[in-house]
Amino acid sequence: MAKVTGLEGVVAAETDISLVDGENGHLIYRGFWAKELAITSTFEEVAYLLWYGQLPNTAELEAFKGQWVADRCLPEHVLSLLKLLPRETPLMSVLQTAVSAMSESQYSWPPSVEQALKITAVLPIIVAYRYRLENGLPLIEPLNQLDHAANYLYMLTGVIPEAAHVKALTAYLILGMEHGMNASTFAGRVVSSTQSDLISALTAAIGAMKGPLHGGAPTEVIAMLDAIGNKEQAEDWIRSTLEQGGRLMGFGHRVYKTVDPRAEALRQVTARLSSEDPWFELAIHVEAAAIKLLDEYKPGRRLYTNVEFFAAAIMRAIGLPSALFTPTFSIARVVGWSAHVLEQAAINRIFRPQSVYTGPMPTEQVSK
Ligand code: ACO
Image (cartoon, rainbow, N blue to C red; front, side):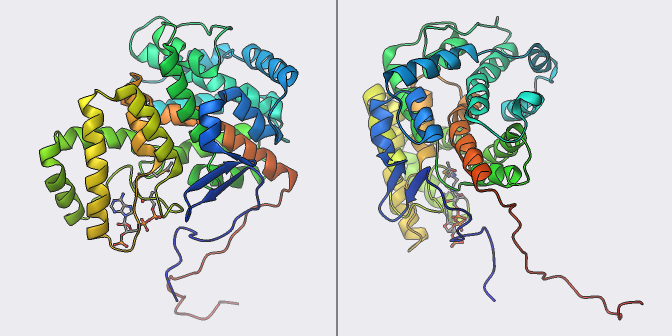
């Protein structure tokens, strides 16, 4: 029998939330092209679309944004926890622990859009507060007049961010919001299928997101480009990595067998921000070399650039340190995770797949 690994090709759920078309490189959020939403919409509008199934009208958006701002507050005990956790605790582990500590009666089963909004509004506060505590900086209160993406940058830096940076970050966050049955979303849906609360589903999703094969990849992209150093060394470095069986971070995808449309869109956004930046020139050079060499070393696997390659480039261009890359991705993906938890709750049946036993059988008869 063929090896059963990674649930490849297994359909685990029907969903109205997004279509990930790996053959044609298309990503659709509830009937809209994700790459167009990324340029034309705000974070709040797309979150509304994913949770309610339609874009808001003006009055709906105003009410939604008002509630969003009202939800921007961190319980005192969670702030104490952020101060208490040892400095060396990875930011993703801090995020997971802090989210888990939010698990109050407000988040009990069944999940609701109100719960999803409340936790989505709080995630950037957790990340920004902890980041500033780690760096010995005073905490910055949220600023009501700023939208989600701008407020996140403001709470990290204490400076009203440049419009170009907000636009670029918004594009990335929107493209990071949702992506079908990826590992973290699946983890969240499995937990939710037990009728556990939204917070428990999200802590599972954050744990999956942390791994270097999933949301941890952008940090590794920066490390890879640092190790390559310059264009002249790119080919030798890539060849040597592939010959040793290593993986090129930011390339390959379980579903996309062509360029990830999110990578394509983010390449354009980053190019506008970083046209003169030698690091970006190196990234573009490495991308081309990697695609050529992946085809040579892994023929037929159809390995192209994934979203993480340009996620790293965009976050670097707006000045976010690599420790913030995966937490920032989580700040976006929490919208998709909660949309899936809501969808799961509406049709719930507990996830309970089977496994094929490949271990030894007892040598003796069953004792009576
Ligand atoms: N570099 C080198 N080889 C690769 C890469 C890569 N980035 N990705 C896949 N391959 C090779 C594998 O070695 C394997 O080769 P083999 O057939 O000779 O054994 C073949 O391609 C298939 O690889 P799998 O691991 O079976 O592919 P899978 O679909 O399970 O993995 C994954 C997808 C995890 C994304 C993989 O491509 C990878 O590790 N990429 C690097 C990490 C990364 O960028 N992750 C971010 C993904 S996007 C996201 O999560 C938001």
